[in-house]
Image (cartoon, rainbow, N blue to C red; front, side):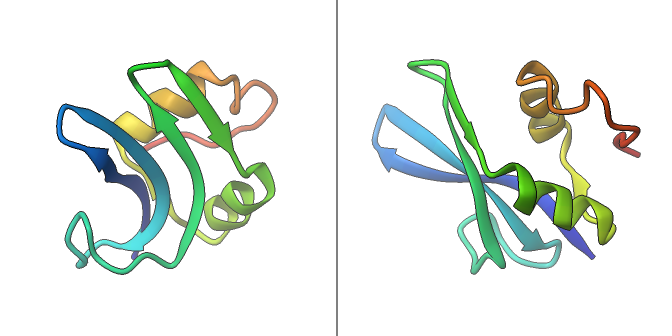
Length: 85
């Protein structure tokens, strides 16, 4: 099963996170299938690759709760009928 989840990057005390599609059995910094965006909590910036996210969601990927909240704040689900289980 594939999930959309955060992968930690950046320096100590200055973390940024990549939003990646990754197999559920992989660890947090494990090999990802594809990078689909990033999130910077310090600057409160989000950059999303919308076609890639839609592709993985249509194939059955589940976003984690944190990624779901980030996508919701970016109004990704405004006209879509996709939710988290």
